[in-house]
Image 1 (cartoon, rainbow, N blue to C red):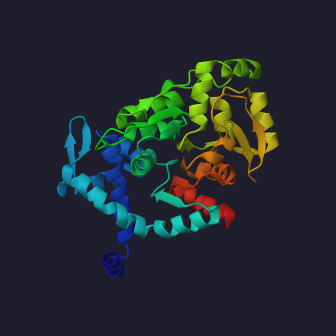
Image 2 (tube, one colour):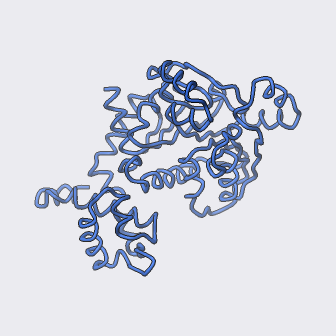
Image 3 (cartoon, one colour):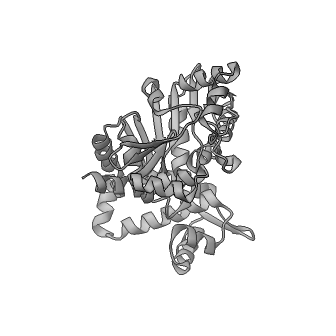
Length: 340
């Protein structure tokens, strides 16, 4: 990074310029083919600025235009990969990761540049990083449990080709929430298993039925066997939701959501709702993995980003079960602002 620091002395504007072109290249790479207007909306820049930057990238052979929209070239993809570390250095993300890991008592924090609340390509980048991390920790014979949600659904879609088939079993942590099928834990588990060449088991139980019905279902031999497999998972990957977001996904009434607000709920995971101090203020009755089951899991990976989720993430991770946090710059900086 000494070369970057030297360039800063004669080109003080290099930080802004490099980050801007990196953001544009990354967005095109994930959303291609894409038009200039859609690109400007995605990266939150003016159309004029995007047009000027894209023209330069086209001249350099990093972006190509077609009738269907812009695409990144092979040279552009290579440059994009080479820019990842310099951009992380310019943004101070290495230091940020260390500070956040220390404050949250985590083994590993990985932060991608940007804020997924603003730029959807940041969420895709988080998903790609999560997939890469998973490939590094998976071993034959393990059970991998995953939650649903938009971020984990993106992880399933973003998985790169793997060099071999993994002799593992992938399971959902919980039943369905009655939301879009592609966001459900069952769908995420099946998608990941297919990418990994692995086995999968699905939990075909809705997450919003009464306690008496759940107890009856849990006594069924096949479901009891699957629940034991889920609760005994070796690796868990879960998203983090704000309390109101998860309440709406569960189909709670406006009165119930108001009650959660009165209780001070800000974050949710595994059916538990936490206040900003990390206290559990409400819990749903559902089949599947519960928070206390994480105590026996070797690797717990939390994934989520966006400045809007910072408070929810702090609330959920205050229980200290998670060891790895994969997030974006927007959430990370806001989290540090809240704890320092």
